[in-house]
Image 1 (spheres, rainbow, N blue to C red):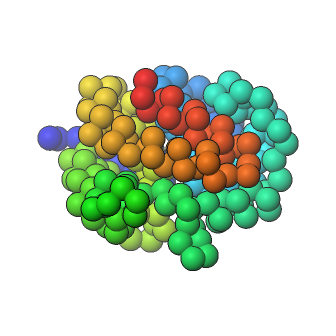
Image 2 (cartoon, one colour; image 1 turned 90 degrees about the vertical axis):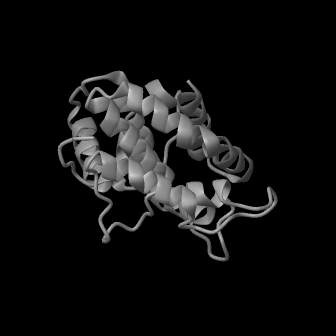
Image 3 (tube, rainbow, N blue to C red; image 1 turned 45 degrees about the horizontal axis):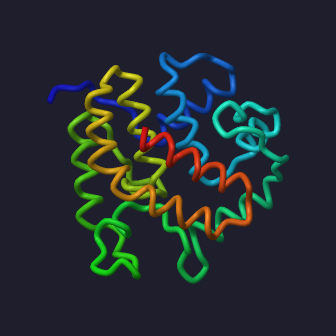
Length: 197
């Protein structure tokens, strides 16, 4: 497959955040939707709180209560980082590569390798300095935004069906059960709807 080299998923995310912050239109609503969801699954930033509190996410999530950065970061850490193992790990491999439905699989399993092959086929590099693994939900959503932006809807649908639809429901169910934040409940609900559409 001969696709031009692309930026890393995190660089793509920074580009999408800049466009959203400037009020620029994406080439398609699909690109924008995936890009916004990806940014929301990352560690919360001041910019995310500002955009949410200005009502700019309401078209996607519906009305949101006012967000506070420290509280959102605390909830993000509790849900997705730990301290003793997060209740909602945001990695495909822990859901897809498990032997038992009651326990998580290991990170960096076969599902991670399969996702990396997709990125490589399109010249998208996951750089070593990136903190998130290639099968992090945000990175996979960024890749969907990349495919939509480049008019590869057929491949986007294939990637989504082979990967996101196979595990995102489990992640979103866990988030909705575990979260104390209406923001993360809305994010899980919206992500499930977008991925299954």
